Image 1: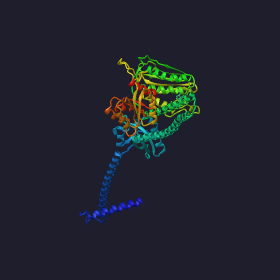
Image 2 (image 1 turned 60 degrees about the vertical axis):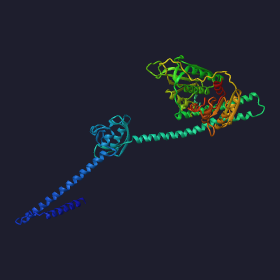
Image 3 (image 1 turned 45 degrees about the vertical axis):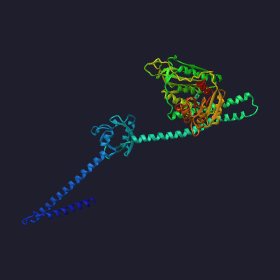
Image 4 (image 1 turned 180 degrees about the vertical axis):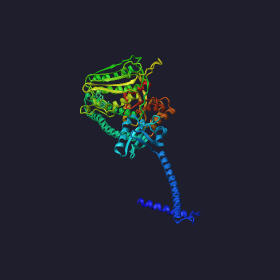
Length: 577
Ligand code: ADP
């Protein structure tokens, strides 16, 4: 077939040459020459023209080939992918401009250098396997690597390589997949987060349902028992105390939930203040002492620094919240024995008094309770995690206390951990940086609500602005013995009107969330004509910023629900004592 084509090609070439010859005006052939010689000359002329034609064709073909080479080079160099040719040892034999750009190098410097030089250490085994597979499998091979470019910037690349036929080298394409990988990672994270949220939501619902129904069960049950006629005083007290316990337990759960949601929404902030640590430890001790001794157990507290040394900069509220959570657990998960808590001064590397190391305060809460198995010691710091077993389910809780404590410790720049032995007891530890103020000798000004005890309150004229009937009733009951008159309105607008009509009002207990006109608005309107009356804002949200908002609106003070008798009376003593 090819031969036929060739013949055809050469016969058409001869044909063309004959035509060109015919057109030539100059005739070389002389009539005096022998016919044989004339034929020979004719043939030579035809050949000459054939050669000229062939030469022309070759020139054209060469131009076309050059154009093709130029196009190929352009494609090769400026393709969006990096192309390179590697030897079986990984030496760069050829690389296009995109490749040199990707590696952030001049192309000339790359030739003969080893590609492995750019491969990040952790990707090196993968790259070696990639080369090995290309030359042993003879098929296209892929791998993903991290490479460090000239300026030490790390990028993720996808390599695909295939051996070149008959040569000990391979063609490799390299694509920068850094952005794709980042997007993939983001997606995976988002997916994991969504799955985790889903799991958490189910766990949360199951837990909350249990944790809220149980105390509600007690509250409603004992309330209906209270209705029975002819109950003895003892029975009444017993039922009331059960209702109170149920209510406290519900409130603890709600407070934990609010704390957790503040942490998760990023609203929980660290508020560093000068703090008298030893005084706080004492307060915590005094707070828990009755409960611990009531359980037949002992409570000891340990302070390692003098009063002056223990005057530190920290977020006092958070330290107290963490200690409270840990001590509550120590009480909850122990039946007998002793609870020890306190702190000591340590270096962050564990060596005491090492001057070069950052110093930390290491707090501990040690109990002689049920203890934990080693596999549970880490997971208990996660949200909603409780060591589920037939025994431990008898202990109440939402599984949030340790998660909140961990978040607080981390916000303060420390860490939290536990050492425990099943059936023997647990010691929870946490650290915080030890900052003392060495630049000033100023006295520590602590924010302490110190209402004067046993102060008499004069009889007051009070307005309760509250849309919830039971809350209003409770407030009235608490304050009635200090009042000559207590009125009740249900909305902000009514509160404004009532204050107008009654210029001798001493105090307004102003609920913030009321229909039509809220407590902030009502306060602002009242302040236009009455600056004397003491307005105490009360909300059930207890969110950060609530107090500031209330003060800004013109309230004198703020109290969060559930309102306790002590808190409310203390506030009244503050203003009217
Ligand atoms: P809760 O106590 O509300 O269940 P926490 O987050 O405070 O939630 O604790 C998580 C789990 O860790 C508890 O359910 C309990 O199993 C375990 N735990 C916490 N403190 C102790 C302790 N002092 N001794 C034994 N187990 C504990």
